[in-house]
Image (tube, rainbow, N blue to C red; front, side, top):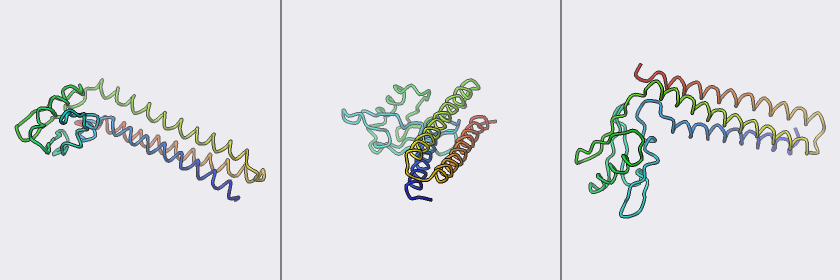
Length: 186
């Protein structure tokens, strides 16, 4: 296969892979019912007058599937962290024991599970759109290339196979996330 065509196919593949990586990153934010430090990723704590991410002022651990433990590096931050969690309005009730903050993650309601599955499905569809756009861009570049018609057709077939594989991978990732939403605490 001509080098120009190989580069076009490889570029399309990399673009499709980045769609998968983006999907996986976004799905980390979709709560699956079990405690995960990522749930607190958006929390900003007032650290000496500066809004600072929670992860930069404390360790966040999961001692079990339903509990988050926040151990600040400075004990004086306990009340600030507690305020930040309450202010973020993410549905958690932090408990300050004087040493650390404990959050019991409540089980998901059926309605909330359905909402989270819808959100995950939307993210999966966005990833598929990204993959299809990579296919379209790749095919457009192939048509612009100086390669023979046979090479162009073969490259388009290769890009379609990549597209099918990546779409299948998105479906698999979504299916796994959907099962996670319904398997917790059942």
